[in-house]
Image 1: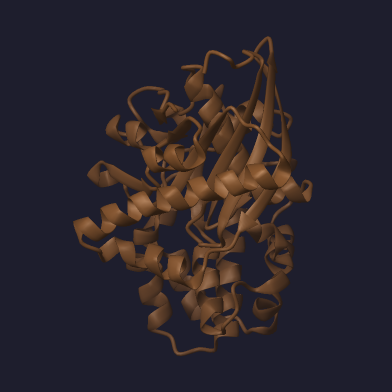
Image 2 (image 1 turned 120 degrees about the vertical axis):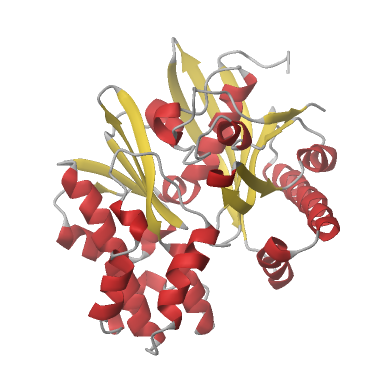
Amino acid sequence: MTNLNPSTYNVIGLMSGTSLDGLDIAFCRFTVDKNNWNYEIVQAETKAYSAEWKERLLSLETADAAIFEQANAEYGYFLGRHVSDFMIKYGIKADFVASHGHTIFHQPDKRFTVQIGAGSAIASACQMPVVCDFRSLDVALGGQGAPLVPVGDQLLFAEYDYCLNLGGFANISYEHSGKRIAFDICPVNIVMNAICEKLEKPYDDKGELARSGMLSKYMLNEFNQLPFYKIPLNTPKSLGKEWVIENVNPIIEQYEIENNDLLCTYCEHVALQVSRVIESKKIKKMLVTGGGVYNDFLIERIKELSSPELVIPDKKTIEFKEALIFAFLGVLRMRNEVNCLKSVTGARKDSCGGAIYMF
């Protein structure tokens, strides 16, 4: 990495979210001048997963060790090949790749988190240095290992006091008493997309299915009474697929209602939980990104239940902000600078996480 200009970095960020929308690939350029960072998403695209890869990723949670390790390696080669194809397609030359991987396990209370996509395989397939495994060090230090995006919010999106992401999970990031605070609010697309799959749709386009449904007050009350929502605000807390399986799915399974009604009810749950958080902060202006931005019904309900002005940015930022920020976390790792904040995760100390595979 000695050929890097110390003030300019060209990085490919890779992100795969829990909602399994696909692999986000973003070629990002970062410049720094006296600790002031600027960014540009130069090129970006999402590669939808094949039915085979979707099924494989969903099944790994219960796979035996040999199958798991094989998938870890093969998914790494899969990522690396997509990076190579992406660079050829756009005539790109990057300094390195920063990969989040795909989360299979996230259980910080048991001191482990696993994002597959072997860095060695990625590096071999695309013939570039790779930074990956961003969460493990923080978990080892007693932290939640999530969310990691707030470092990017703090350094790249400083003009916004609050940043809300509506992805597989909703999470928020903001300054509080001189520290960056962030936490997961509730599941979003990981639940709603799974409901849509029963209707043979990948997602609820513009929230029209939810809009056509009827609210179940009893189910809504059960969602809102889950113990997670009683944890105080400004407290490090994170959610994973396991939490959804153990807490949300049993509520869904005990009600025999139409899927449109279920979507309507769950949308209302998300809107209520998000508004509960942002109303408590007296927020005036907030950046909103993530796939949930395209759910018009959800955005309308959040606006109706809360007072802040919601600032929805350009399409690239909406869709690729997480890939952008993991590229940036890779830059901080290469510079040996803090890329994970204890004020966000609850770890014993700030850290510089990520495994580096040189090529």
